[in-house]
Image (cartoon, rainbow, N blue to C red; front, side):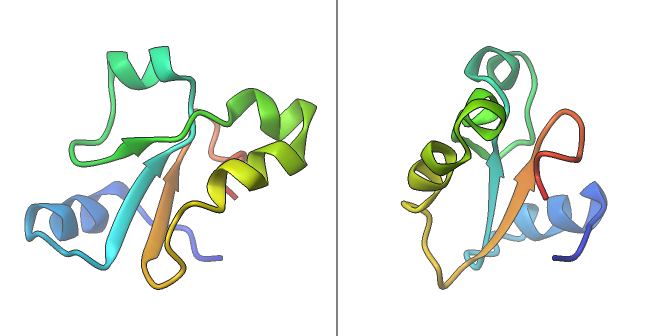
Length: 79
């Protein structure tokens, strides 16, 4: 899994790159306060610690044919 900086991701979103999906995995309240424009929220922050299998189930809805860029508060959870 590659680590990316925000700038190239923002560029791709601004250009309307449909093959790149940004998923913010922080709590819904944190997402509501501030997030990457064009990103979507899949709140699995607690599940990653408490029940990783539940987190995986929630993330399974994401398409496999798109590049998924995950955003979290600590950078560790997104890995």
